[in-house]
Image (cartoon, rainbow, N blue to C red; front, side, top):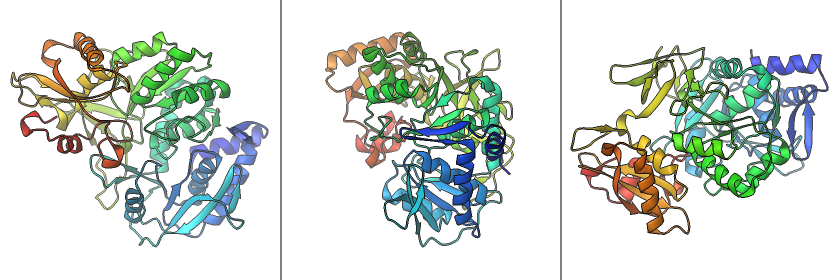
Length: 475
C-alpha cells in the first residue's frame, strides 16, 4: 500500500512513544500521528475523486497528506504562490471535487495545530491515469500549470533510494523551508524523513521566514533552524544565497548536517561560498516528472560542478544531442494526456564525468548559438552571475550575437559600479566565449506577471516580452 504508512505503523507498534512530528507548540508520537491519520481518512473514504490541499506548512498538512494516501484518494497540492486562477485551473483540470483549506469555525475538523475546512469545488469528474496518487502542478513556462500524475510507488521509490544513498543513520530532524505543496519537499523531505526514522519539524512558512516566498527573512530562517536543532534542509539556489549572507552576518551555531539544493543550476562558486560559511551543501537534480529527484551528491561523496550519481532505482542515459533520458516509467503521464512512455526525455542537456556523476549544462530549448558558432547554456552563465552577492537576478542573452549580454537585477542599494565589478568577477570564472560583455539594469522579475518560476528560474519568453528583446538576442 504505502511504505511511508508502513514505516509509521511499525514505529507506532515497536516504539509507540517515538516522537515523529513536531511543530513550535506541539508534538505527535508515531502512534498519535497514525491515530489522527486514520480518523481523517475515515472522513474521506467512499469517494475516489481527487482532493485539493491548500494549506500552510504544519502538522495539518502532514496529516491530510497521509490520510489521503490511506483513503486511496489522489491529492492535488496547491502551492501558496499560485495565483487564484492557477489554483482554480489545477482543481478543475484534475477534477478535484473537494478542497481542504484552513478552517476557523466550530464545525470544522479539529486537528493538532489547527482546523480543516472541507469545501466542494463544483469541478467535473476526470478520468485519470490508473494508480494516480498525487497530481502535482508545475508552473512551467506558461500561466496554466500542467498536471503531472504520480503513483505512490513512484514517489516512494525516490524516497527509498534517497534513504539508501544517504544512509538511514543520517536521519535526524528535518525542517521544511519550501512549501510542502512543492513535490521536492513533500517527497525528499517528508517521506524520506519518515522512511529513515527521523523527526519532521513542521513549522509554518511564516515561522521559517518564508511568509513572502519572494522576499524571505533569512535571519529568521537561520535563527529558526538553529533554535529547532534542524539537521537537514532542502533549498533552491536563491534561498541558499540568502542563507549564506545571513550566516556571514549572524554566525550562529547550528546543527545542520546537510543542505540539499536543487531546482536550478548552482554555481561551484556559490557552493564554495557555502562551505566557507560553514553550511554543508550538496547539489542535486530532478524534475516533477521524476517525482522530484534524479541524482544527488552526498555529504561524503560530493563533486562541485556535478549533481551527483543517479539514484539507484533509475536508469539515466544521454541522447546523441546530450539530452538527459530517464527510465523506467518515472511518472504515469499528464492529466488529460496519454500514458507516459518507458523513457522520459527531460529537455535538459547533460554529460557524465569519468566516475558516473551527472553534470547539467542547460535546457535544450534555451541553448544560445553565438555569431561565432559557440553553443552556450545561459543557465551556466547565469549561475556564475548569481554567485555574486551584488546580483539578485539575471537572464543572459546573445543568440546570433557576437557577445553575450544580460538583464540584471542588482541587489537593493547596489550601484552600477559594484555590478560592473561583480560581472567582471563572474567573467573571470568563464571562458572567453561565455563572458557577459554588457548588461542592462531591470526591475525585479515579477512572479505575479509570470516572469519567474517558484524555483527562481527566469521565464524567458515573459521577460523577453516585458523588456522588448529583439529576436536576434533571444535567450
